[in-house]
Length: 269
Image 1: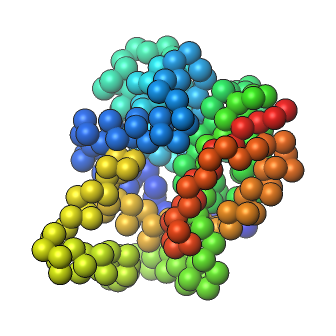
Image 2 (image 1 turned 180 degrees about the horizontal axis):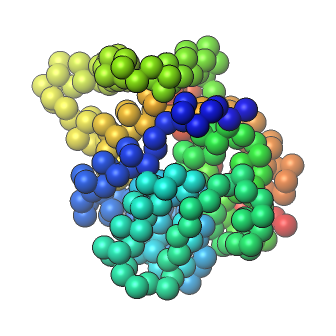
């Protein structure tokens, strides 16, 4: 069940702050991460659907790689982020369209048609209806097309503890600074300590953005505050989509820890 609106994390506000830090290196890293996972150097001429576009960074990356892009997000501030990037890098572009909409809106999705590549990274588990949202995303993939999704890993008891932290963050605004501090120390404290002991202060922090072009601090805020929150084991996602005519092409797990498992599926129908 989706929580009342007041308990939902302000994803768009976090993304707008991220855009204030965005630089050319981050954009290049985002493009490379798409190329690496999709296994192709160009998506030129292909249609790309970005479900829950967030900051708009990966819509931008796909457009720079030559795709025809459609982005949508339910958060109006996230929509503003994508529009700002389009205006900055592709003004008056007719090959990148942006909407405010929900992946759970079946009528809206039906009007979009199908796409060569459907992308939804770290989004579907925040809808309050993960499996419905996953089915909706899968339904937008053309026969032979690709579905690239990233979904929070199910850690069992640890995931339930994180759910309690996230719920508290959103329900108790006055305690958010303390909750963020505690979450930051839990997530990054051991890593930063190891870096210091090896005389490589903040080395891991600096390298963080090299994978997907993201900001470590913005991702901490997103992880601590991101609510609604659901998780799934890799085999659950695999089985669910196999039953719907998809085959797994590539998998990147988070090693059993917190964070997202990434899946690239191919539609066989």
